[in-house]
Length: 365
Image (cartoon, rainbow, N blue to C red; front, side, top):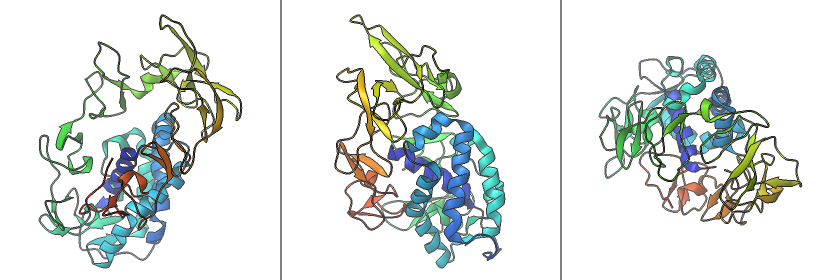
């Protein structure tokens, strides 16, 4: 799974859980803090699935969504929340979880815009006002974020407007992403997009075609074809959730014959497809876009030390990441690392995986 996506997931969860400060003390009723990752992971995955099963597959690949996101949240965010509660900069109210998770599940595709939900405002509430010191965004009141300058700690600040400097998407106001270090408006349906400029709403950036600009297209439009219908990867005319656009043949002139198919059984022959046409834990070994090889065989996804697969969106087995073209099991906090992608937390700092602190420098490929 792509770890920029992992970071996005964590930012969404934090934006849902961060709330307004106030005079209320922490509540001892409701689930304990240790159960917060389970509750949020289940609710968030339900929202993703409600929006689109295709999005769910893109987010977590071969992994079970709730299990994967729970682990991710425990590594990236829980240590920061625990530390902030201990020093009084965050209040936790377990009795507010049920109402919050119900609201999260009901969101559907709205989660893509990182909304703030009133029902979640009291679960994990920051108490640090604007201008106050912070280590993570969870400590800041309301819509404030932890702005880091050249040193730690940072300071709680208002979200950045279009054109302002930023470090990541959560630094920016709703509807904006951090692109090349500046808060930038997300393109809408029909507008031009790129690998670095994601589409707003429930849209995706179309596949690059020679002589044509890439544009934002609605997910429901792109992933709409039924079993047996003709699909076309080049024009982003793809299959609905649970199906793959499988390429049967390519002529010397470049004409492609492809159709929507169900997953292929383990150990059997498969064709080059998008998404990969094998079961979630397998890939079509031997099939390749470069060099073009149409046929392969469904095999288990590669694990620690093996070369990453290049097959319709899947690279490595669950709980692994593709780092420098090799599959590597994700590292826990405290384990040695060289880049962010190696860590469950998506944060490698000074040679070790750490929680996703706003103050810690990152190490990327």
